Image 1 (cartoon, rainbow, N blue to C red):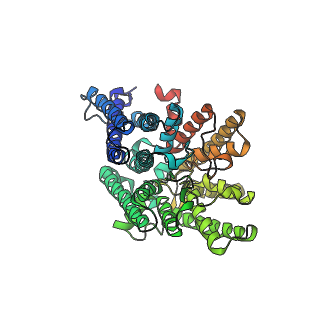
Image 2 (image 1 turned 135 degrees about the vertical axis):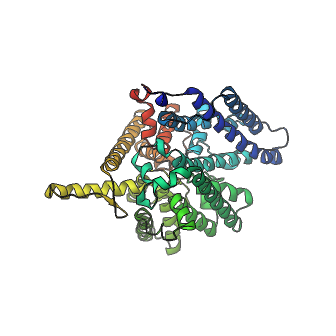
Image 3 (image 1 turned 120 degrees about the vertical axis):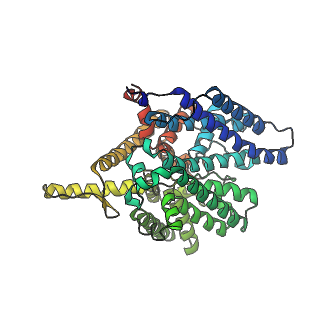
Length: 486
């Protein structure tokens, strides 16, 4: 084994130390809200911030001699996988110390659901939770959504999964060689765009029927495709104006952020000429119209209500955000399968959304059609093309494998929950909702439902699925490979 490929554990420790310091600083920003609403005797958030910050400082201080060392491939993979666990362990402290959850399992589950922007909650009465905890809960999703964008740019050399490669290839109008030398500059600009969208949505929501607190919380959980709300009824209790604003920003969060950046600063046509984005818009429009017609015909809904409910639900499901304005469990059962399929699809690559991603579905579908043509014309050269550019066979193979493994994990997870006594609808809904980082599923974990009733073993299984969905499957699976550690 070459020296450059060996795992340096001091490097890993130092990275986690920096991440905990950043997390501790974010916790400190919540303390003014804690003291404003609960007085100086409140201790859960300040104590959690103190523990997190001191731990991060201790890890950094103990590895202070590790400087200037480049992170290799395996260290990058481990760092990505480990970071979500570390952030969630300490991020769950405010829930646990504030006694908002009964045990460590629930605290970890809630925090991990936040950082992975899943939105699966074990809280049964959101309105009874202190405001500082709700703010931190929303902030975990905002941090997690931002991390995905930045990791996708900064850690590209360590991610050999097809979808992540496509994020930087010329198929999206981006030349990898040109962007790689300036990755930090690109990451900063993406961070600025992410922050700008958050602030803009906050102002627009405040102009409606939300106060500043609700506007800030919902903005952070919308742009991150998270779905945590400050109300048990999610967006159902807010005005049509607020629902329309949230719908627009959910759709925005489902777009490729790098393409958005290029569209704004370099090429105004970049986004609208992108094949993945066109399919993204097409799916939203097509499925929303289908649902609207069905709701008007079966449930006798008015045109306006059916259109709003359909568009909001479709965008929320496709972008794996998880907000809701109506209980779709009361809709015809046939529509559930459509919503489940939207969970599978996901939004665009390079977005904050979860799911398989549209780009992978495009490659999978096009390659399947071409395989039929190759069977008829075995000597024909028929490459898969995205945005009029050929996709390499290695990317096609990895994409096909990814879709197969994703479906296999879904079936395996649902089967495990069934063996634990969970009903069929909930098993399917919870597994797919966590694997796709959506949170809101079908069955008992649908709208107005929570994950609190599930056995602790089931919560740990679903926590693993949240990690698998957020770390793009292969990255986390690689860590469990014996060859990886050799």
